Length: 245
Image (cartoon, rainbow, N blue to C red; front, side):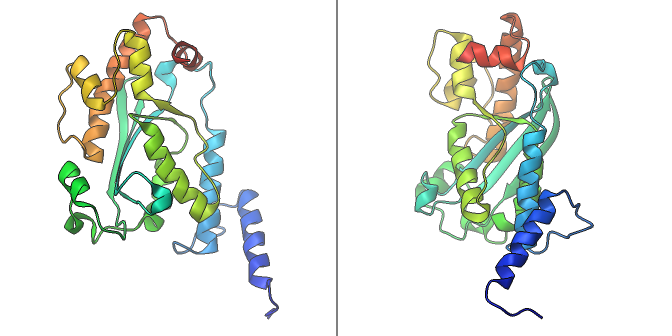
């Protein structure tokens, strides 16, 4: 057995290379959260995302959009704030095809103001899995689509902070800001909050400030925006990018 210094590091590198060469789950199990096998498996998932991007010429009705929302203990992941709830919905042609929601144990206290805003308390998350334990499941769900959300940069920043710190990686697919799309398509108003956009389109805001509730609100908003896009002759993903630029 090789006990020389650096042999474990070399083994990690070899395993990582094997995954990049395309070994499947049965050939090399991902292992426990935190193991190098698991880390290599996550990197492989992230690489797969890049290969599933929609072409810019794809019609909007054929693009897989993934509406994403997270609840976090604060606004600064670099200062230790954590995700404690994540939800997402896959949509194609205005239809929900799959939904996801998971409480996450953040391993830090949820501040009073966040508890008051979201209605989520420590008892709701204390027995929940950690983000490490759910990473593969979450990133598989997010794979292959265009991510959209309201103030989506917040959600993407938290996920990318985790991915970089844990796996030295990041989300590979594009993300679109619903506030910007709403403002560009409506053309006459500012929509600084999800509430303001929902009010404009007469969308009921049930379970506001919960990840799952906000995703369902954004589902209805996205349906309204797709209808408005069609009215304006926006047919493809490229058309949408050009229009909101």
